[in-house]
Amino acid sequence: MLYLITKNFLEVFFVSDRYPMKLKPHVVETVWGGNRLAKEYGIDPQGRANCAEAWLLSTRADASSIIMNSKFAGMSLGKLYAGHRHLFGRKCIGREDFPMLIKFIDALDDLSVQVHPRDSDMAVLQPGESGKAECWYILDARPGAKLYLGFNKVITKSQFAEAIGNNTLMDFVQAFDVKKGDFFYIPAGTLHAIGKGVLLAEVQQNSDTTYRIYDYNRLQNGKPRALHLGQAMDVTDLAPYEVQQQISKTLVSNEYFTVKESSGRFGFSSAANADSFISLVFIEADKASCKLSCETCNEILTVEKGDSIFIPAGLGEFKIEGMCKALVTQL
Image 1 (cartoon, rainbow, N blue to C red):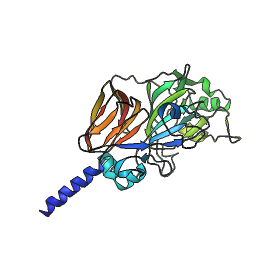
Image 2: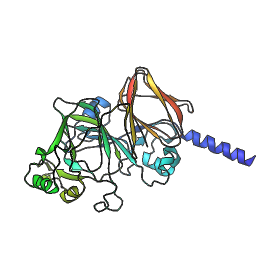
Image 3: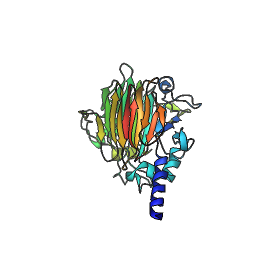
Image 4: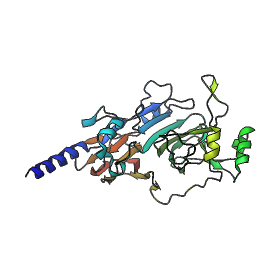
């Protein structure tokens, strides 16, 4: 009898923890950022001069998303991860750090040309650092806007170094014209840059390890931003970048994350099992009609463009009613 009471109590306790959580993003101001996220996606700039990045799903201690509704309202997602690991799923058990970060990025100006290391680049990684694979979904792009990915031909390490030294690097970099709805997966080790006029959503490994290669001789607070040429030379893939054609609504699925695009005139439905949480980032939504609900909780959320919703692992089936489009991400 005691076993049954305890078992039932635990089931009720854990189920009550599981409900769709609307997240307030952390906002980042940068030298290249714009304000389209505030104007078009309802992101609160939080007093910053620009709204270059909105960290929609983040557990960083100094930059965590904040839960806005119901039982955990006001708690940071980082604190939730530390104290309620079961809500993140079996794939997070044993991971000290949350493995993912999701952002919006608004590039009013060009971002630096940079590269991220792989997890296997142990010679350059410092203790506690990890590699960083990422992917980009284009929310919008001004006419002529570009992404820069990899090289336009195979080059040698000495040619790479020479191009950096004589300021001709961009002559060797491959440029891609982009439009709304395009998707790019950027493996760690790929030289890359976001061009001005691009607005995108980024899903990445939860890592800040970035080696800046070229920054257009730009000044920040009167000084050039630091470059990391030695590390970049060690980790950059010198082959051309190849665009992966998408043949389904699954944009990418690998050891780091699975990202899908879900949409519908009347909404869509899905389910969160015990293996992983689900992140919903709404890139389109009719505020007047778009609502999210689930079978196992009483929570009904009104959803609008720009919203980030955390669906706990094990929640079960949920549905979104109303015209919308979302990036659906899980481990």
